[in-house]
Structure formats: structure tokens, C-alpha cells
Length: 170
Image (cartoon, rainbow, N blue to C red; front, top):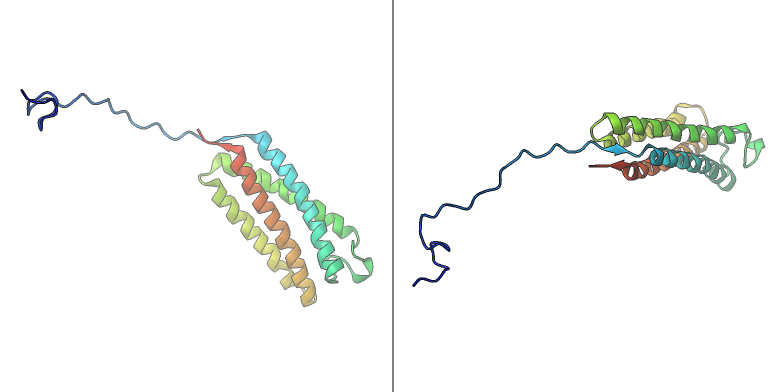
């Protein structure tokens, strides 16, 4: 008598039919990303607050610590004139506009994170290079570029993180 584990399988015959296979169905298409709009916009508002504060801190650093007169004449002191508030509000508005752009990209484009990174990176590069087209002193050019760079990095990095937490796949 043969053992059940023969070279021919458990049935002991070399020509036993293979076991039935499960039916093959086409794979389901990937689920569309779902945006948690409340989470996205709450993160966008917080990014706007951080961007405004980044503008104020950057101006304090450049004007107060480094003594470079950017966005205001030297006589206006460390906090400067109305341009400090204008830059802070402008930074907050830019963060909210970037949030709107990010929301649009998430619902309408493939790979929205990549498009968003490119757009924010190029917009930041434009703002960083813009002071070098003026007749300001070299120190003021570098100081202004540094302020814009810090604001752009804050907006881009925070909103990229917000997007990852606000998008649900599947």
C-alpha cells in the first residue's frame, strides 16, 4: 500500500485533475481620494497664522538683529511702519490662496502633491529673486529675499503636511 504522500499527489494517480481555481475578477479601480475639506481648511487657516507670524519674526531678525533696513526706511525702527502689518497680512492671504489651490489640485489633478510643490517652489523662487531686480542695497536685497524664502518654506511645508492628513484614499 502506498503512503498518501506519493510523487503523484494525495490521490495516488498521476493524472488527477488540478483543484478548482477561484474565479478571476478584474481588479477594482483605485478609489478616488476623498478630501476632508474641514481638516484641509483648518490646516490652511493655521498655516496662514504661522505665515503671518513668520513674516513678523523674519522682519525682527533682519531689521532688529542684523540691522538691515528691509520693507521700511531705517528711521522706522525694528517693527517698521505699516509694511510689517501689510507683509504679515499678505503672507496670511498667500497661505489661504495656496490652500484654495491645494484643494483644487486634490480634487482635479493626478499627483496633486507634486504639482503643489512645484507651484509653491516656483512662486517662492520668483519672490526670492524679485528683490535683486531693484536698486536697493545688496544687504537689503538679501534680507528681503531671506524674508520671502522663510515665508514660502513655511507655507509650502505646512500645507504639504496638511494635504497628507486631509486626503483619504479608499
